[in-house]
Image (cartoon, rainbow, N blue to C red):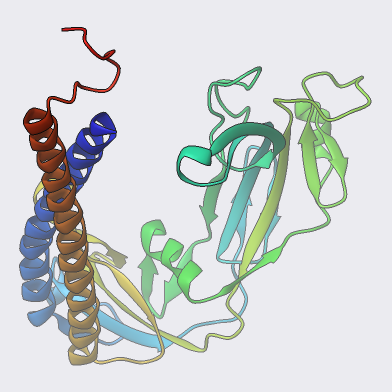
Length: 304
């Protein structure tokens, strides 16, 4: 029992210092982000102003509901959407747990999972193909949006399944097309799904519910890109639904950061308290053993 208390206190202590460090780093990031947004310039979407080059701009405008095309060149799958997402599930052994505490039991079951396979049984060391996101070229008025900004539309739209997949990948990669998914079989002649087989399916982002957006980003020519600081630290690069002013964007980011700060402090307090309790319990147990001459667990009575 003492060993588990020691291990638990060490783990919780490490987590406490981790969240402390993360919170300190977030202070620096917050200061730089709010400073950049505080100096942001509201720019029109119908023209690109040279004097805003290199600055953080806030651009709002209406967006088209069509005219997009995201394409996966590997499997030659394309959709009329700003974002196409390729998902890859592997049939693999997955760890399960049952019960709690000393009664907890671990076992493994075979199932489809999008997680990276763990080295257990005959699980493969990796997926035969990786999941990936493909972005269409996207314009907001006269501005082009960098792919990393287009990806953030996933928070504003809805994912829908992509059907009617083509036969090009079947012939090119030896896949099997069934329903709305491609299947990769290690033993194509087998009658059953086997560990290591993969299922490849797609989702597209539906943004038909969006009429206007606001983007806060750095202007580079006619492209809007993320602003990053030292060590490639993310500072500014946000996409919002609707029309917002620079002041609105500043307030939204300030609220998000305040919430993250509260969560960080709560986690520090929780793990710090757990660490203190575990250390205290360990000390009490050690004193009890010394006072009454109780040997450490694992030793037999009367043996030094």
